[in-house]
Image 1 (cartoon, one colour):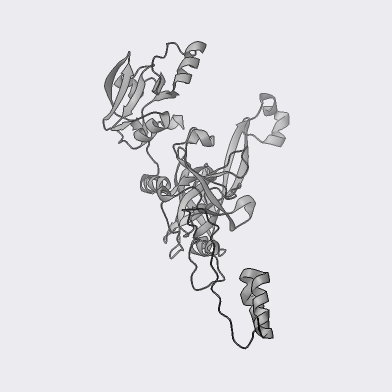
Image 2 (image 1 turned 60 degrees about the vertical axis):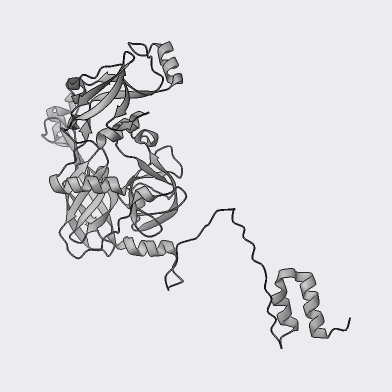
Length: 396
């Protein structure tokens, strides 16, 4: 075989380096560029398409930075303080101790301060944050990212959902873009912005770990929220800040941190926050429909164990549904005729299998309007019509 030196170099390059032929040929055959078509092999799993969000013309900025640029100016720091009072032991109210504690008749006061986050939802200064961030405060200090400081009026808060609203006197403010939590899919990007541990304008990133976490799963059974779970770092001070999707839209409010959790954070879906915020801005409070029953979920295993332990005053006969174990006296459920031992199987038009579904249907009902509830009592199905009332404040 008669080959020139250049051609021989190319030939050997193909044999030795395989798909690196473009590099080898450039060394031995510079006069005539060699064009080689090399097959592209995908390492992705079959049927799985992974495409990061598209970048704009500025290729030096990634999608996380773009999301932060959109929403970051609307994220604020909230400094709140509240005065706590406590009674002194009787011996400290004697004249000798008054030089130290004053003449407060045994009452001692101390100021508790805390820092949280929030975000602006209107150009005229309406903010959303967590109820626990501003609880006990009528006014708070709001610091914008550009350093401006405003006094904020706490318009209202709702402990059941941990949502609060604040108003500052300002105009032409940057606002956050609100998205939809109902469109979230576990595994997609999640971006948190806030002021953890007093470190302003901190950005962390992770994924949506799960959706529709119940309040009992999160460890706050007194709340009426289906939480978003994320592994984006959320620390004290992040509370009230936004959780963003890859497009820079707010999909949740960072709120709950389990003390025993590592790498787990939770957020209130933005739809819930918007609904509650609207009521708070309108009338200073949020109303939640209330029945007044305590419930447990039934299963064959639960039925067997409870009956064996004789934990209740009666024997359970059903194996599925939601069992009423207590009816609150003088509650709407009591007035409608619910009884301990009733098993709820349907609320409104929805068949229910657990207490969370019952709670959701009650939450979606109208205060003072008839809500039909189907129960099994003594082996027979019957319908009870109840008119939910507003959740009593003493229950918060």
